[in-house]
Amino acid sequence: MQTKPFRIGTRGSPLALAQAYETRSRLMAAHGLPEEMFEIVALTTKGDRITDRSLAEIGGKGLFTAELEEQLASGELDFAVHSSKDMPTVLPDGLFLSAFLPREDVRDAFVGAAAPRLVELPEGATVGSSSLRRQALIRRLRPDLNVITFRGLVDTRLRKLAEGHVDATLLAFAGLKRLGKQDVPTELLDPRDFPPAPAQGAICIESRIGDKRVNTLLEAINDRTTHNAVTCERAFLGALDGSCRTPIAGHAISEGGKIGFYGMILTPDGSRFHDISSEGSATDAERIGRNAGEAVRATAGTGFFESWS
Image 1 (cartoon, rainbow, N blue to C red):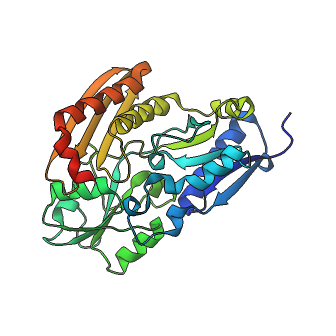
Image 2: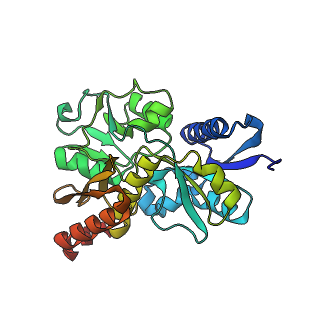
């Protein structure tokens, strides 16, 4: 019988903590356990400490997970809670994504100071975003805009917007909702025109392979629909060697035992893109995503990817 609290690893940002609290609440409800059986351990990652450069410049997605994964591998943590879109497609040996919580809204939220909608921004307006995917999609839709790298916590970016550093910014609507800031967006972007990042809006839990005690605990809160959709999207990303250096979008919808997937790759300037749609059985989620990634890579040709380096 478990007597010591389960140690839950997380980043220390308000959004990351909100996700850890949601995970704890779901585990308490699923197992009838008191709050004191879960200890939330907040760590500061390299990605949190360095905010004046793009993730591509300082090493990519693993910057938000490395410290947590080191303590998870050593046994100091029992499991870690992450934003799924921050997870590299290749995880450290001995670790895996064991559970996904029910997915939130996948849409990107536009927050405009100079205009309420992206298409209504004045020519030459400055839009700040830390995501290469969002930057490329903005440039595809509005090549006249000045798009700059814009990093920091949600509140930091909203403050900089209010202070006039930029005319608009984009954030994940899921994160804003989890922070109680669902009224902040001035526009929610249609995922058919502005497809989300693979795994956007999904909270995942990482644990040790073979840790039966912990993985049995987590299985009770795993949302199979989200699991299938994110598995498909991450397989698409993996087939394209996706990282923070690559503008890639992907969105899978899993329902009724079927899965439908839409993916897109873009050049960073948004001037060229290739997209793909596929569907099949939800039990083949990983294969569907991987095949879509391999197909779009073959269609684009090797020259397309030279601009990603």
